[in-house]
Length: 361
Ligand code: SAM
Image (cartoon, rainbow, N blue to C red; front, side, top):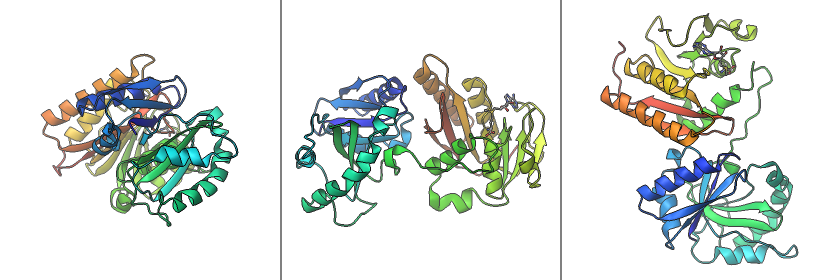
């Protein structure tokens, strides 16, 4: 297999392709992307056999912004016969796929492709059986082993490949399934919840999203993000000139400050989380988050960078690079991840965890 297939939000194929090209070059694994606008995926073809496997091992998935999933892949299989789709798929797998612990029969995230999901669910059962029989799959699901992906892009057309469970998205189609909580004040609440799922390992939630912590929410109204913090029994300074949902104010866990988010300073330096969803220039928001971390006013930051109409990839690279330089020059040790989440539209979400424990100033 000398291709890598990456899923992305439809309409962001160019950004995803630009990113994978840069990362492949940096690893000295050479090839080129094939892009079809609004397809919800990018196929990257490497010149050398074996380089696709090197890429999915060496390129940390967590450091890709626009890809929701990546796996080493076959070329597109077309015209699968309706009476036997399984044989050509098994043939395409050949000898160079490691034995897998899970099978995901998926589609890209486009409306047309998603119409195939019902078929995918049904087809998974006989395909899994055939794969177990041919010893491509272990007889029991094993989340530590590689994952086999079959991605249907149209009826009778699919890609077949595998990802490593230590370096992929753990989610089917690369999308965490979240249910909108009926009592949340806005749909944006799912952006913050998804960010927690993607950026914070589940076994660290009790410690890093702990009851009693303080959070600051810049651009908080009507309160979808604040709701996520309140739900975890945290206290929140909600900063916005607008109105906060009364249900949140009634909890007694929220202090509303009708002031400019760029000027707010927390009254006590006991804040763990700074979150920010202000609709503002991304460079300005990134700089503000840098200042919060440099002053040690918060330990972890989660924020959106709203993307411009044009040059979206370049803007993101520039803002993140500037922010990293700003933090490094000020002696901050940190871990940074950025992702175009499923619930993000024309924006990406960035998470920074401060790794040192300096006292605030
Ligand atoms: N995260 C919110 C939620 O889940 O309900 C939605 C936030 S909405 C996308 C953006 C908010 O940012 C608006 O309510 C707006 O008033 C606020 N905003 C924009 N600029 C601001 C500033 N300089 N200071 C404070 N709030 C600001």
